[in-house]
Image 1 (cartoon, rainbow, N blue to C red):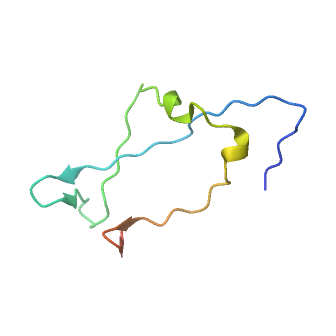
Image 2: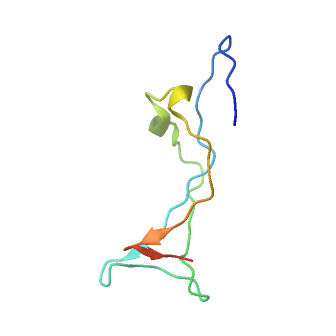
Length: 75
């Protein structure tokens, strides 16, 4: 677990952001040929506003993500 030095000041940044596309007719995620959900990123987009108002005390260490869609595990 990461410990923050109480004598230092920290800022919060965004490390990674992924998106997926949804077919509006079927309400299903767009999938790759292997059946996994297609993931996308956006270049040169400023996500820093998402961290506005957060403090390092609000952060929890990241764990592996399990993706669920409508209650089902998604590849």
